[in-house]
Length: 131
Image: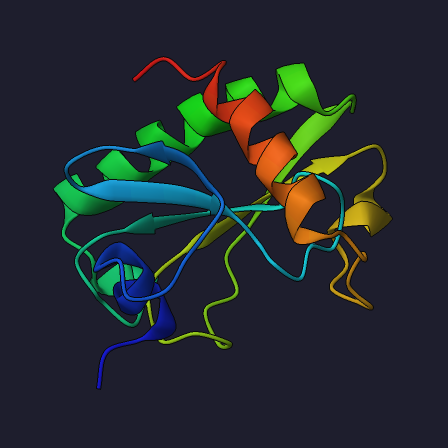
């Protein structure tokens, strides 16, 4: 059975897309920990991030770097933190989260954001990405 992320890639489920290439997709988390919480995924479904080929993993990180640069322009913060947890969805992905303190990377109660707020934010970030 396809993961929820594979269903997003296939267009079966909607997302607030911020960037896309032939091999990777970035979209806002619908249960964000902080404003701007973005997920970067390879389009090819692979459960465990370290099972990606070296080229796929490197490509994912370069893609995430570009997304992070745009995210930092839109959401004021000291840094864009990155987390790889990999337990909640069986599809390799990285979390990009604007942070001002280490505690901002803690996974806790999600931030409440409407679909309209997420769509506006996704559009602002997408406008600043150069792929």
